[in-house]
Length: 208
Image (cartoon, rainbow, N blue to C red):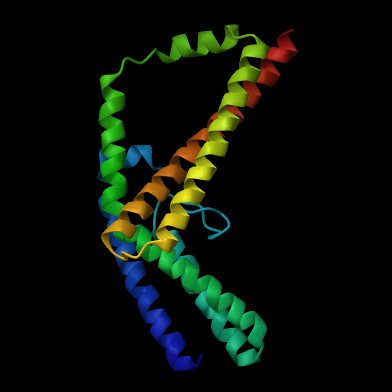
């Protein structure tokens, strides 16, 4: 890969950076984004950045392209090839995510409307209920959440395989990408709940 090719890759990422900035601005005005915010859009195995916005991921790719250029000049072909493959995966993932943004927020909007229709206990009632829960009930609840986490991971893997094997590279892939992103959001909330339950268990066992 020569300098001209790196320049073309930079141009693609610069265009994605502009698109990410515009979409982030639009998403900030959507009520449905409340269900997505504060959760990473991609797994930490793909990006070091962890954000509910697209721009940090585009900027991360830009930084890695600068590193790629340094490796080209150093002549380290093995590291250059590995980094190039990683960047290409990131670019494709970001492009898929940006294309699936509308579908992702439509799914979130449906969940938001469903949640609004259901009766919620007050925060005081929930806090009181937590304090009265015996530790064995909390351990059962923790096990249920770990099982939910396992199922979500399996669902993500399943849909990623479907997307990779899909013959339709447009609409169907966008739908699968939106589902994968939504599942990652659910996985993030599940892991936050697990951390909360673990703290509740520690508190309950100290009171015993």
